[in-house]
Length: 148
Image (tube, rainbow, N blue to C red; front, side):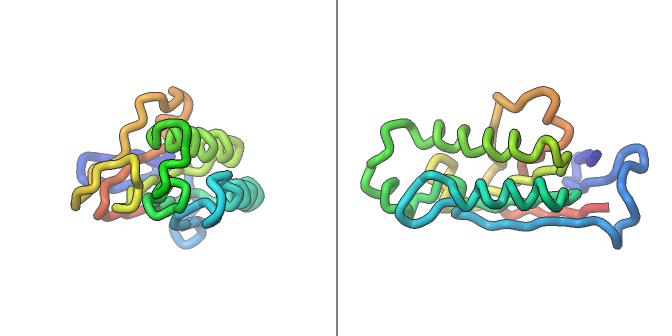
C-alpha cells in the first residue's frame, strides 16, 4: 500500500513492497480513445496490460475526456462530459482491482470536464468505492511524485 502524507510523497506502509529497484511502474498518457470513437478501446487494451503485468504503480495522465476529440468538439455526446469521465474512471478502477496496482491520476488541460486553469487541481471523485480509497490517488498538475 502507499500512503500520501501532506507533502505529496508516497511511501510504503507495513513494508508491503519489494525494494525500490524492483518495483514496476507503468506510465500512460491520454487520450485513451481513438480519433474516430469514444469507445475507449485503447483504454481497454491498457487494462489488459495492467492485469497481465500487475505493475505496483500506474501513473495515468489525461486527457481522459479529450477536448480536442471530434465528437466532443461537435457536441455529439448525449451525456454530460463529467458522466463520461466517471465511466472512464470506473472502467480503470474496476479493471485494475484484481491487479492491486496503486493508481495515480493526473489531469490534463485538455480534460474537457475539468478546471481549465494552471496549475490544475486534482480530480474530485466522491463515488470512489471505499475498498479502493487506499490505492487510488488524485494529483494536481503539476505534481511531484516520489515512490519509495
